[in-house]
Length: 234
Image (spheres, rainbow, N blue to C red):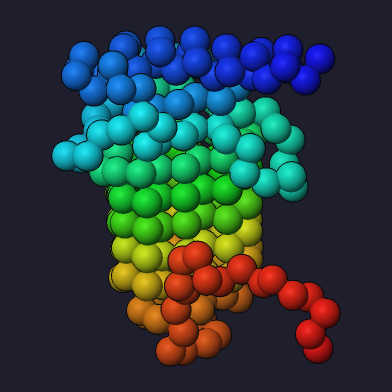
């Protein structure tokens, strides 16, 4: 029974992965199966996918992997009409949705990680620097989708803007990154922080609260060494 389940899992990942790679990538890249898809839900597959890296290898990009038991193991959903670029290794966890519109563009920097329940929506442009991490349930959207009408100026207000996230940024659970946001490198955002344009974000600082403010200075995340191993210490 265990062997049957394992075989079913392999086939479930392998067959759509083959299709996905050969649909989007040049043959020399596709044959290596650099993109592995787990329980994918292909809403729409158009646009372009580019791997902008000299080191292309099997499984360097994993979409929908079971990364957290806090969310259902439902793989990932994608609706793609624009351009998605991978700069290198990428891990995107379970119960995640990616929507890239016709004029949208999403650039994932080297060593991008999104745990689970993440929602990414691009209609104009989202760029993540290298070693960016998104926590559970984080939402990233470069559009508000609905414009407001300015009665005095008699015109609609702009409701979208490109997002540029600096390298080594870390967003904790359920953060929301809004249109026109730009951050520096080594920024940290606490749980449920709403990151908006024009914020005074500082490197090597933890940001949080509403409105957002600096909570802690002179701190950084060291990837691979930040996990708590012993909860018995008071």
